[in-house]
Length: 334
Image (cartoon, rainbow, N blue to C red; front, side, top):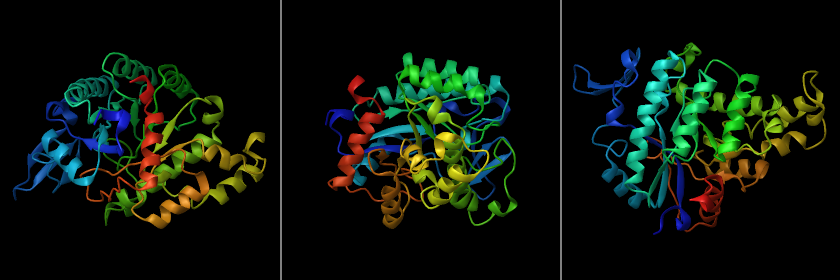
């Protein structure tokens, strides 16, 4: 196989944990240790993730990753930051230090396996100017494929201060991938109900993705930046299922813009966004496709996670998603 150009399956939802980034955010870590019972413990600031074994797993061992990719029918992956380590709410200097270290190490890792792997850049989104600088460095000097950010970094996606950042994505001709992090890691705590049954992951992520899509459209981001390519994880959360309600608001609510008041206008904007197919249910995926089509649908597995889903390399939709991913990743420039 000759890498991205002829891969049958291209996974764009595959997180990585890098040993060399431990402690790169100063007192915030990250740190990998064990609890008193011998269970693995991953600390990010005051947040502790217990029971997930990163060391000795495909998250950290590239040989194990490649072997698991072969077993799973995945030809090519674009590796992305662990959402626990976005560090979007810590001091800018510490966030920049972590992002630079992360991107340097990730670039070296994927360069050694360029026929199977590429990377997305971690960015210090609490400071849009610093985010532009690091995205530019990561793309032009390190060869990473675009930016990878959370849904919450202290300002809404339609904040005018972010317009120069979106302009930089367009100028560099790279996509921007959006994936939530659990509330409360290094920023504001979420609803207390999210703290049991893994609801921060199961419903919190869905809510944040839905909010992101709605804000991008209602806030006019896609209209101001018509060449901007944004991809949202997990099929955009619940956005397909409430598309009718959101479209009605675009037509009727007093805060909406004239451009959204025409029939089909909201749906047209919705189809401008890219989505990964990580929904864990073919019925949900079919419904998403019925709303936005499949021209901007890409494969995302949450590789090596508890909810990694099955890949069918020879399915027509898999081939379609691989071709879509090549467009999203600008494979013709590689």
